[in-house]
Amino acid sequence: MKRYIGYPRSSGTASRQAHADLPPGTFEREMSKEGFFGPAAFFHHRHPPTGWVRFEGPLRPHAFDLARLVEPVASPWQAAAVLDNAHCRLRWLRLERPMDHLARNADGDELVFVHAGEAELYCDFGHLTLRAGDYLVLPRGTLWRLEVSAPLLALLIEATNASYQLPEKGLVGNHAIFDPAMLDVPAVDEAFLAQQERGPPGGGAEWPVVIKRREALSTAVFPFNPLDAIGWHGDLAPCRINVKDLRPLMSHRYHLPPSAHTTFVAPRFVVCTFVPRPFETDPGALKVPFFHNNDDYDEVIFYHAGDFFSRDNIHPGMLSYHPAGFTHGPHPKALSRMLVQTKPATDEYAVMIDTRDALEVGAAAAAVEWSGYVDSWRGAR
Ligand SMILES: [Fe+2]
Image 1 (cartoon, rainbow, N blue to C red):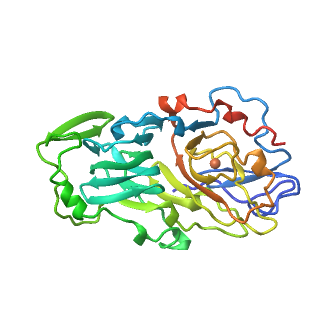
Image 2: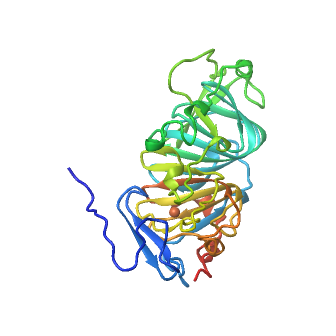
Image 3: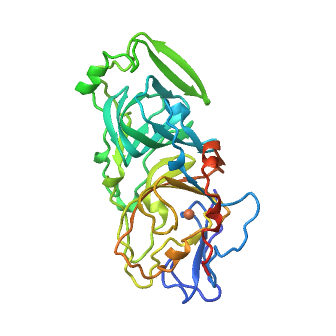
């Protein structure tokens, strides 16, 4: 039997509710356990908690411009290393030609987020067309390949040695955020049956299957197309949902924490999605993300489309990485709209990955790092 030491207390001049009716002229910072679910304290600071003038040492916020990784690859197993730890591996895939082999990830489930382009997915379960904004969960072991019709840019998020699941929806019920009926699965359709007779692009009848296990690649070659099932049944399959089909939670009187936007969960990380939503309207409610440390998680955000309302100098295709222990919050321009927004709604699509374990920066990401990111909070006084 165990539980956190916790009981609400207050000292000095403080608001009574989180994210609302702050003492005039103060900036709120949240310090919390378990992301935004555990015990938490809310401080009312005289200065923005990101008002440093110097930042030295290995701990620092990062931003990477993945759109600058312009070299195409021929296989998901050649995708550029972005960030990884023992439980989560992020890669950046730029695929411009149809794959000439099948891929199987034996290390874990793969979540593909399509940033741009279009491709036909052929896999054990059939055929599905992928477009920008699609999330695709590929269960571990699935054989798959992509026929690209418009150059594909995608973030690959591996749940190493684990499975993706849907979050517990709690009070709002199973049909909130998205109805599970919106999850599409591949179909054994005419296009799928027709490809069973074809060899790989480039000629020949032999199909290589490239299997990744413990980050090492092995190839099994078949004299026929192994995607030859004429049907299947069961309750395990890849699934797809597009960000445009998400219906976000919001409150006009309370700035919801990012966890309200959780889309998929794995044992040691979560994937959340920010999609357009109205701003809070209550005069006392915060209209921007609160400053916080998120001390139990490393935080990653991939910027997919739109205007990123809490960040300056960030464009689609960029990815920010805020390691635990570093306080962050709105950039100076956004902070000026802390209590009054000029627009009625946000206009951003972004994918957030919060990991319980520290991430390492991959070589490809390091090559496209914006080193000035740590200074981008300058001017917040
Ligand atoms: Fe954060």
